[in-house]
Length: 556
Image: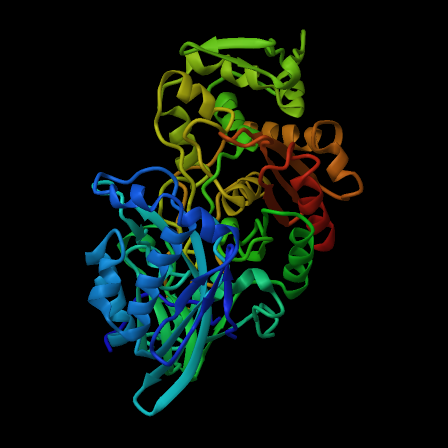
């Protein structure tokens, strides 16, 4: 089998009740006979004359009988290996036929048994049992999936709504299942002290280990094994999803890759995010750019490295450097912080509509006054913030080479109200904890150093660089702003007890259709910088702040 570019992590049937019905599986290849009992049957058999008149387009909610009949038609044909008939029972026969054909031919899955679960409205869950065979090697495969029944628009006929996830829940549309000699050998990833990194010990590292294998599997000197994999299509690749191993038929010989992760900090990061939902955090060493820890409470997607979220007021660190450089703000000079400021036909306000009368820019930064920043929008060019983020902080250039896939932040050029919103980390600005930890690291170090997980000496790759640095005056004021915020501002409660040379900034980012904002926090202490986000949780000082502060303490 040809080489594939992406790889990833490894990963009974009784009669089933379907709503008010019982599905009984009879015989070997035959899927089953649906016998109907109870109230559901009476409802489904009412008005047979109406059904006879249903030569018109049927509409309205699907009945239980229609859902189970459509599910039966699809699952029976699939189990029998009648791909054409199974595909015809879906609303996209071409796509269904292609994937179901590959299920047997490319994935080499045979002796398939499909067992339905209890119907829930228009959805029918089912379990899958089969055998994956490649040359002289075979292994059993079991997993659960589900299908949804919909009406075809032109005639109202109930059909299975086609999605690749019907065949396997790990499949996105355009993905395929393939069994064969893995194109990429496995890797044994080590922490900075030489200990092995495993998903069992560090649950957040699943996608990181996938990425390491993808980039270094062949370079690390291992040999490939035989696996059943999800091979990603173009859309999944655009989303930077790696291929995923579903079943290992035979082991390959792993190569060895050493990372910069600290075992103690990684363990602490795992513990911190585990107590909150949708929490992510990254810890860096500003003097080198080494990534010391990265953790997510949700383990499917690496939000810490690949998330794309509005960073809220943590972006004011970058904006402040811009305003100071342009002479539009100075830490200890008076600066406006009104309740409201209108720009580009949008009326911006502060949290709880507060204002600071006669205050300094330092006071506005520490209290996170939105209007103090928005009020300077008329003095800026549309691309001012974009250039500052790219040229000084190394963001939004899409050129980081960390060792695994990352999103390097986005600060698009926008105008009017959207440009103003970007100044406070909303609008089109998108970041993740890796990006915002790097922002604090740049302030602490005085120069951007691209974060990395694998030393560039391993493979001779080049790291991204910023085209310029801040002036000494701008840098000194920015450090003063973050230090003041850590001691007396919105970050003070979280940073209480964190000793040494510290600086911090909180953030809250409003998200459509979300009751609470995403809470952000970025900070540094000595030669450590960290940032975290807790989604849909509230203000950053009380949500992400304690996570980041605990790790800065743990780093010693």
